[in-house]
Amino acid sequence: DTAVSQTPKYLVTQMGNDKSIKCEQNLGHDTMYWYKQDSKKFLKIMFSYNNKELIINETVPNRFSPKSPDKAHLNLHINSLELGDSAVYFCASSQVANTQYFGPGTRLTVL
Amino acid sequence: GENVEQHPSTLSVQEGDSAVIKCTYSDSASNYFPWYKQELGKGPQLIIDIRSNVGEKKDQRIAVTLNKTAKHFSLHITETQPEDSAVYFCAAARSGSARQLTFGSGTQLTVLP
Image (cartoon, rainbow over all chains, first blue to last red; front, side, top):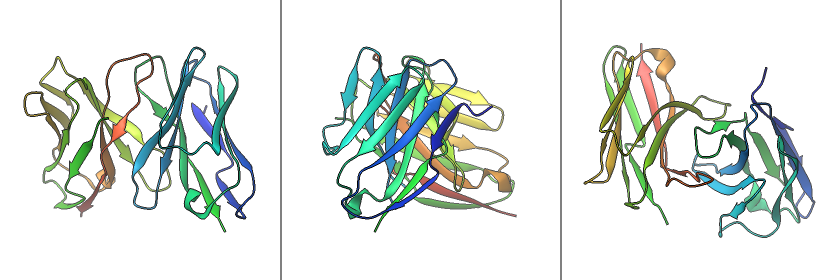
C-alpha cells in the first residue's frame, strides 16, 4: 500500500488558472508538509500543518494555500498560476517531529 | 533562518569505491540531520539520519558523521553499486512540533560499472 500518495502525477495548465493538488497519507501521521522542487532540484519547504498549527514559509506567495479536510489529507490550492510556479511539488508526512515520508511528486507545468 | 550548503554538486565514482558528500549548516540550534536519496521520477527517501547527541551512525554500507562544533556533517557510502546512483540531499532541522527541514542543494552521484 502506498504510504503517501499525490494526485495528479502530472498537471499542465494555463497561466491565470486555479488548480489543486491532493495528498493523502495512510500512515496515521499527525503532521503533513508541502515542498517545492525547482528545475535545479532544490527542495524548499512551503508549509507544515497539523491539527494545531499551520507554519507557512514566509517566502511562499499567498496564492498558495493548504487545505486539510481531515488528518490524512493536505491539499494544495494555487490561485492565478504563474510561469514561475512550474516545478515538482512533494507532499510529506511525519509523526510529530520524526522521519518525514515523501510522496511521489506532482509535476506542474504552467504554459 | 537555517542555511545548508552541500558539496559536491556532482560526484562520479567507480563501482566498489567509496563516496563522500559533505554538508555545513548555519543554525547552531539545529539538532536533526537526515539524508535523503532521490531516484529519477520519485520522491526523496530517507536513508539515514543523525541527532546532535551522536557523532556517528552506521547502517550497513552507509554512515553519517556529525561535527557540531564545526557545524558540518557528512555521508559516507562504501562499496558503491550502480543502484546507488541517485541525487542525495542532506537536511537540517530544529526540534519542535513540526520539523521543517532545510535541504542542501543535492549531489548527483553516479556509480560507474
